[in-house]
Image 1 (tube, rainbow, N blue to C red):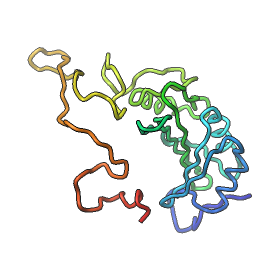
Image 2: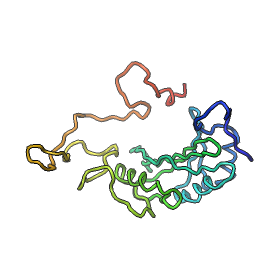
Image 3: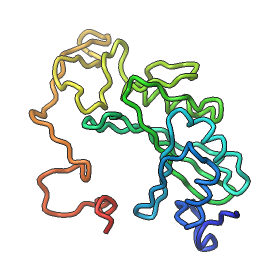
Image 4: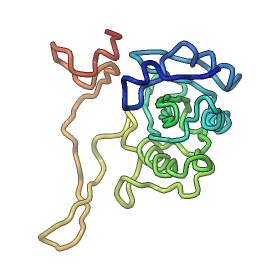
Length: 215
Protein backbone atom coordinates (compact mmCIF):
# COMPACT_ATOMS: atom_id res chain seq x y z
CA UNK A 1 0.00 0.00 0.00
CA UNK A 2 1.64 3.23 -1.14
CA UNK A 3 1.43 6.16 1.25
CA UNK A 4 1.38 9.47 -0.61
CA UNK A 5 1.15 12.88 1.02
CA UNK A 6 -2.09 14.68 0.15
CA UNK A 7 -1.74 17.52 -2.36
CA UNK A 8 2.01 17.04 -2.28
CA UNK A 9 2.55 19.28 -5.27
CA UNK A 10 1.05 22.29 -3.48
CA UNK A 11 3.41 22.19 -0.49
CA UNK A 12 7.16 22.52 -0.24
CA UNK A 13 7.19 21.85 3.51
CA UNK A 14 6.53 18.52 5.29
CA UNK A 15 2.87 17.97 6.10
CA UNK A 16 1.29 15.80 8.78
CA UNK A 17 0.09 12.46 7.42
CA UNK A 18 -3.70 12.56 7.69
CA UNK A 19 -4.92 10.35 4.86
CA UNK A 20 -7.14 7.34 5.48
CA UNK A 21 -4.58 4.87 4.19
CA UNK A 22 -2.08 5.69 6.92
CA UNK A 23 -4.17 4.38 9.84
CA UNK A 24 -4.65 1.05 8.10
CA UNK A 25 -0.97 0.91 7.17
CA UNK A 26 0.13 1.60 10.75
CA UNK A 27 -2.06 -1.21 12.01
CA UNK A 28 -0.70 -3.57 9.38
CA UNK A 29 2.91 -2.59 10.01
CA UNK A 30 2.98 -2.34 13.81
CA UNK A 31 0.48 -5.03 14.77
CA UNK A 32 0.16 -5.55 18.52
CA UNK A 33 2.66 -2.78 19.27
CA UNK A 34 0.06 -0.23 18.17
CA UNK A 35 -2.47 0.84 20.84
CA UNK A 36 -4.31 3.55 18.93
CA UNK A 37 -4.16 5.96 16.00
CA UNK A 38 -5.47 9.45 16.75
CA UNK A 39 -6.42 11.97 14.08
CA UNK A 40 -6.85 15.49 15.47
CA UNK A 41 -6.44 19.01 14.12
CA UNK A 42 -4.96 17.71 10.89
CA UNK A 43 -2.29 15.67 12.66
CA UNK A 44 -1.73 11.93 13.11
CA UNK A 45 -0.51 10.33 16.34
CA UNK A 46 0.37 6.66 16.78
CA UNK A 47 0.19 5.44 20.41
CA UNK A 48 2.46 2.44 20.94
CA UNK A 49 3.38 -0.02 23.67
CA UNK A 50 6.38 1.16 25.67
CA UNK A 51 8.17 -2.19 25.52
CA UNK A 52 7.73 -2.35 21.72
CA UNK A 53 9.05 1.14 21.01
CA UNK A 54 12.31 0.19 19.30
CA UNK A 55 10.85 -2.42 16.89
CA UNK A 56 7.92 -0.09 16.15
CA UNK A 57 10.16 2.86 15.30
CA UNK A 58 12.45 0.57 13.32
CA UNK A 59 9.49 -0.56 11.22
CA UNK A 60 8.41 3.03 10.61
CA UNK A 61 11.92 3.98 9.58
CA UNK A 62 12.56 1.03 7.27
CA UNK A 63 9.17 0.59 5.53
CA UNK A 64 9.67 1.65 1.92
CA UNK A 65 6.29 3.41 1.71
CA UNK A 66 6.89 5.43 4.91
CA UNK A 67 10.64 5.93 5.46
CA UNK A 68 10.45 8.02 8.62
CA UNK A 69 14.22 8.26 8.59
CA UNK A 70 14.66 11.44 10.60
CA UNK A 71 14.00 11.98 14.29
CA UNK A 72 13.13 15.65 14.85
CA UNK A 73 12.23 15.66 18.55
CA UNK A 74 11.63 13.70 21.74
CA UNK A 75 9.89 15.48 24.60
CA UNK A 76 7.69 14.77 27.61
CA UNK A 77 4.42 15.80 29.22
CA UNK A 78 3.25 15.30 32.79
CA UNK A 79 -0.34 14.42 33.75
CA UNK A 80 -0.18 13.79 37.53
CA UNK A 81 -3.71 12.36 37.79
CA UNK A 82 -2.91 9.44 35.49
CA UNK A 83 -1.53 6.11 36.68
CA UNK A 84 1.16 6.41 34.01
CA UNK A 85 1.61 10.14 34.41
CA UNK A 86 4.34 10.77 31.84
CA UNK A 87 3.82 10.82 28.09
CA UNK A 88 6.89 10.53 25.90
CA UNK A 89 6.29 12.19 22.54
CA UNK A 90 8.42 11.38 19.50
CA UNK A 91 8.28 13.30 16.22
CA UNK A 92 9.38 11.62 13.01
CA UNK A 93 9.98 13.05 9.54
CA UNK A 94 10.00 11.32 6.17
CA UNK A 95 11.96 13.40 3.70
CA UNK A 96 11.21 10.86 0.98
CA UNK A 97 7.41 11.16 1.28
CA UNK A 98 7.27 14.68 2.78
CA UNK A 99 5.38 13.49 5.87
CA UNK A 100 5.45 13.90 9.63
CA UNK A 101 4.19 11.48 12.27
CA UNK A 102 3.87 11.76 16.05
CA UNK A 103 4.44 8.65 18.20
CA UNK A 104 3.41 8.54 21.87
CA UNK A 105 3.91 6.15 24.77
CA UNK A 106 3.44 6.41 28.53
CA UNK A 107 5.25 5.48 31.73
CA UNK A 108 4.79 5.97 35.45
CA UNK A 109 8.33 7.29 35.76
CA UNK A 110 9.69 4.15 37.37
CA UNK A 111 9.42 1.99 34.27
CA UNK A 112 12.22 3.02 31.89
CA UNK A 113 11.73 3.77 28.19
CA UNK A 114 13.87 2.01 25.58
CA UNK A 115 16.45 4.34 24.05
CA UNK A 116 16.34 5.21 20.34
CA UNK A 117 20.04 6.06 20.14
CA UNK A 118 20.69 2.85 18.21
CA UNK A 119 18.32 4.04 15.47
CA UNK A 120 18.90 7.80 15.52
CA UNK A 121 22.15 9.12 17.02
CA UNK A 122 20.56 12.51 17.80
CA UNK A 123 18.11 10.78 20.16
CA UNK A 124 20.77 10.94 22.87
CA UNK A 125 20.42 14.70 23.27
CA UNK A 126 16.60 14.62 23.43
CA UNK A 127 16.54 11.68 25.86
CA UNK A 128 18.91 13.50 28.19
CA UNK A 129 16.65 16.56 28.09
CA UNK A 130 13.62 14.43 28.93
CA UNK A 131 15.45 12.70 31.76
CA UNK A 132 16.68 16.02 33.14
CA UNK A 133 13.28 17.75 33.02
CA UNK A 134 10.91 14.86 33.85
CA UNK A 135 13.01 12.13 35.45
CA UNK A 136 12.12 9.48 32.86
CA UNK A 137 15.03 7.07 32.37
CA UNK A 138 15.98 5.68 28.94
CA UNK A 139 17.60 2.25 28.99
CA UNK A 140 20.37 1.84 26.45
CA UNK A 141 21.35 5.51 26.33
CA UNK A 142 25.14 5.52 26.72
CA UNK A 143 25.31 8.98 28.33
CA UNK A 144 22.32 9.41 30.66
CA UNK A 145 23.39 12.65 32.35
CA UNK A 146 21.65 15.94 33.02
CA UNK A 147 21.98 18.41 30.17
CA UNK A 148 19.99 21.58 30.97
CA UNK A 149 19.99 22.12 34.74
CA UNK A 150 22.81 23.44 36.91
CA UNK A 151 25.53 21.34 38.49
CA UNK A 152 24.21 19.61 41.58
CA UNK A 153 20.57 20.32 40.69
CA UNK A 154 18.05 18.16 42.54
CA UNK A 155 14.69 17.03 41.17
CA UNK A 156 13.11 17.41 37.75
CA UNK A 157 11.71 20.90 37.12
CA UNK A 158 9.09 20.10 34.45
CA UNK A 159 7.14 17.82 36.77
CA UNK A 160 3.86 19.44 37.77
CA UNK A 161 4.55 18.76 41.46
CA UNK A 162 8.06 20.23 41.41
CA UNK A 163 8.34 22.53 44.49
CA UNK A 164 8.53 26.24 43.82
CA UNK A 165 10.58 27.08 46.92
CA UNK A 166 13.45 25.55 48.82
CA UNK A 167 15.82 25.31 45.87
CA UNK A 168 18.78 27.39 44.79
CA UNK A 169 19.73 29.15 41.57
CA UNK A 170 23.17 29.60 40.06
CA UNK A 171 24.47 32.92 38.74
CA UNK A 172 27.70 34.76 38.11
CA UNK A 173 28.53 37.27 40.85
CA UNK A 174 30.44 40.35 39.75
CA UNK A 175 30.99 41.17 43.40
CA UNK A 176 32.67 37.84 44.20
CA UNK A 177 34.01 37.19 40.68
CA UNK A 178 32.75 33.63 40.76
CA UNK A 179 29.65 31.49 40.34
CA UNK A 180 27.40 31.57 43.42
CA UNK A 181 24.31 29.67 44.55
CA UNK A 182 21.42 31.61 46.06
CA UNK A 183 17.96 30.68 47.35
CA UNK A 184 15.24 31.02 44.74
CA UNK A 185 11.52 31.60 45.17
CA UNK A 186 9.19 31.67 42.18
CA UNK A 187 6.33 34.18 42.33
CA UNK A 188 3.50 31.70 41.87
CA UNK A 189 1.56 31.05 45.08
CA UNK A 190 -1.09 28.73 43.64
CA UNK A 191 -0.85 26.31 40.78
CA UNK A 192 -3.70 24.82 38.81
CA UNK A 193 -3.20 23.22 35.42
CA UNK A 194 -5.47 23.82 32.45
CA UNK A 195 -4.22 21.40 29.82
CA UNK A 196 -6.26 23.10 27.09
CA UNK A 197 -4.56 26.48 27.48
CA UNK A 198 -1.39 27.73 29.20
CA UNK A 199 -3.19 30.95 30.13
CA UNK A 200 -5.85 31.43 32.77
CA UNK A 201 -8.37 34.21 33.32
CA UNK A 202 -8.58 35.36 29.70
CA UNK A 203 -11.83 35.95 27.83
CA UNK A 204 -10.33 35.53 24.35
CA UNK A 205 -8.94 32.65 22.30
CA UNK A 206 -5.20 32.61 21.91
CA UNK A 207 -3.49 31.36 18.73
CA UNK A 208 -3.19 27.59 18.91
CA UNK A 209 -6.08 27.05 21.35
CA UNK A 210 -8.31 26.06 18.45
CA UNK A 211 -6.39 22.78 18.29
CA UNK A 212 -7.58 21.87 21.79
CA UNK A 213 -11.23 22.54 20.93
CA UNK A 214 -11.11 21.12 17.43
CA UNK A 215 -12.48 24.34 15.91
